[in-house]
Length: 248
Image 1 (cartoon, one colour):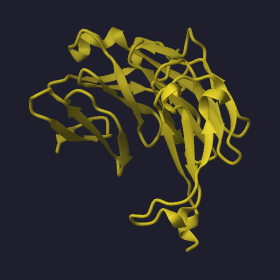
Image 2 (cartoon, rainbow, N blue to C red; image 1 turned 180 degrees about the horizontal axis):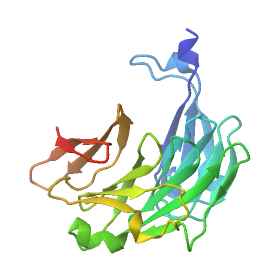
Image 3 (cartoon, rainbow, N blue to C red; image 1 turned 180 degrees about the vertical axis):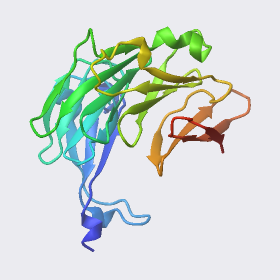
Image 4 (tube, rainbow, N blue to C red; image 1 turned 135 degrees about the vertical axis):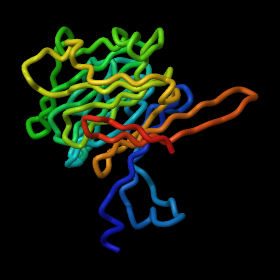
């Protein structure tokens, strides 16, 4: 049916090039991806050849789905790709293990666990302009270690609030940071950007992935212990200023 044709499925193989990875597969025949079916021949794009990035890790779209944001796990390459013709319109030298476009399409938040950093990138999808200043637009998250209560602060995934004003950052060692993302005249690297720090006692390690629905933020955590108990938790956070936390 017509509805089944109105989407594409973008899949990244983040394996090393030597193992056949570094490619983007685009399935555009929606009618062949219904139910338990997974058919059709994908369009294949060599992401390494496109911009030199190593180990492409995540792909997310801006609100209007005109552009894809592709981060890399092993190089400082943040791609912005025009979805209509698969053209790379920006290749930013940004530390971005994961990158999330804001709901209002004005910025991209990029986090890097090795560098313990959060970068705010100004985004203009109409004019395809994507800029940041390494001095002013990179927030050092390691300075919040005492508030989190851990020796390091390694960000994994950024999740924007629905109004794009706040960012919820999950942490590898457990805990959570809530960061003020507003364009309000302050430099982004100002420590006052921290709204709230949550400790690992409240949110367990290795949270990755999240979504905002109905004024609430849903994030997860996952714990793997060799020869030990496995555990995953879903957290529901009230996105109002009180920020109440509920564990499921």
